[in-house]
Image 1 (spheres, rainbow, N blue to C red):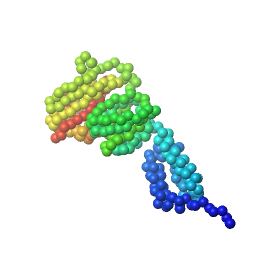
Image 2: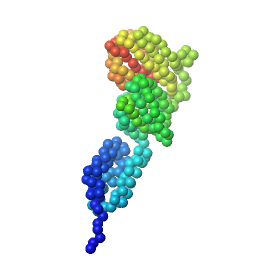
Image 3: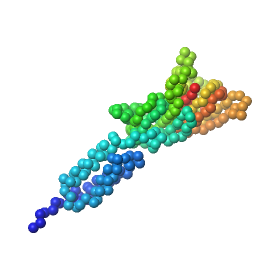
Image 4: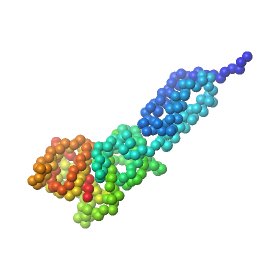
Length: 301
C-alpha cells in the first residue's frame, strides 16, 4: 500500500482563507508606487505571489510556512530598503516653476499615506497650505511628529533624505521652494539690516498686517494678511521676489511710474499658486476680493 499523501494545503486552509491571503498580497504589491514596485524587495514579493498558484496541491504545511515567512520578511524590509529618489522623481512633488535661482514644487500627500524617501540637495523654504500633522522620517533617525498651522513658513538646511507621512484625516499640502543658489547666498553680504528691523517684525497695515518671518540664505520671508479692501502701502522691490498664495486671492497691484508695466494690474490666485516677479519697481497691493487674503513673499537679494 502506498504511504498516505500529506493533506493538500487548500483543504487545510480553506479556499476562503487562501483567497483573502491572495487579495491582501496583491493589494500590497499593486498599490506600491512604481519606484518601489520594481525595487529588488518588491520584485521578490511579486515572484512569490506569482509562484503561489503553482505550488503542488500536496505541499506540506511546513513548506508553505517557510514560503510565507520569506514573503513576510521581505515585506517588512521592503520599506527600509526602498530606493531613495531625487525630489523631482518623488510623485507627490509637482514641479510648477524653475529658473536659475529656484525650483517650485507643489506638494500634496493624501491622509495616511507617505512619500517616497527623497533627497533635498538644496536648502529650501516651505509654505504650508492648511493645518496638518505629519511624521517626518529623516534617514537614519527616529521619526518626528510635526504639527503645522495654515500659512506656516519653514526653512530647512540641506542636504538630507527623508520621507513624510500625513497623519490624521487631513492631507499635507505645501509649496516647497528649492534655493538653487544656496551656497552663494549663504556667503553673500546681508541686505536686510537688523538695526532697522528689516529682518523681523510685525507692522499693522490699513485693514491688515505684515509680518517679517525670517531671513535665510539672504532671502526675506514675509507674511501678509489683508481684510477686504486692505492695502499694502507703497514699497519698492530692488530685487525679484516670489509671491505664494496661502488663500485664494483677488488682488490689484498698482505699479508706480510711467513705464509700459505701470498702472493697475489685477490678479487672481488659487491657494498654492505662486508667481515670480522681477525687481526694480514700486507698487501698492489691494485686496479687491470679498474674503480675507493671505500670502507669503520671498524677497531675493
